[in-house]
Image 1: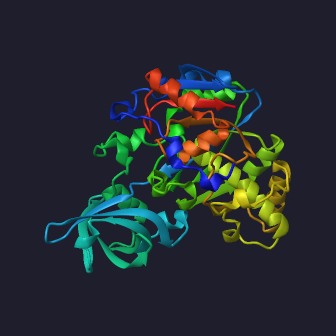
Image 2: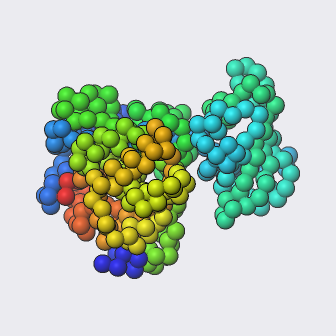
Length: 404
């Protein structure tokens, strides 16, 4: 299959608005679970998930945490300007960004940009009872994004505290509703830790401490990595063929321990969500790269959109992971920080992910292409069943377990 010439219109299905879950269930793990096993489809309740998983397997979660990435300013004219944080610039490191005090810069999307041609935006707020002012000024453009510098008048207050005070959680646009206070809890996984995403890794929203404990009881090992989900995850494919769609780049962080565990499990993993998939599969291509570029730095390990389709599989997954681990040891890295732009679509051969837990994705989306590739084209079987059996769709919807 020539992946680049896939027509996105072949990945369409009817999704009435009434089937989109606008709010989550009151109990996360009571969502429905579609079970696809070797071509057969059935259903259960999510809290029974561990019963379907092989003993001794390795399950990988994305522990990213959604930040309150929307900041609203009102100009003296009354115009409302929304600044949506996309990617940290100064400092560029996520952890340092949230600790920074005084000033910082982000790449942002700006709503009502025509009303903010120049000048400084300001808004007062309080932290711990103390009054502050947050200001923003545009410093340039990068594609459709704006470089925005923020500064505030109290050097003891961190940017993380500012976002907690003035930011708004960015729930998906297709929910067609305002963010509510409850979303601050329900739109985070129970294991979220590392701040940086502007969207939740939604397959993880179904997990509760009870389900995690049951996974442990079934002798399934759990491991975490980090991929910060970008706004591009909601960007529709507008080109007729996917060759014309540019994938968004997302930042990943993987501990050396995680790679060691993958090797110990024969380079086989159960992935929780498509973000875990994109990270795990990217590790293979990073390993292939460092095997022939031993002096590469972390930035050079970036996996480009079409790398999988331009790279002959010259190594097994185990060999690639061992090469990556050896590279980390030579460079004395306990954690790998890099990025991926990988697109997974029919024609892609999975290297590491053997079982996938995911939600139901939008029609004509890159995530639906990823699922189709995983099921060797059998995605309609799953989606026809879900549509005819009253499953709830998208971020707050139900879940499916896919075992090809």
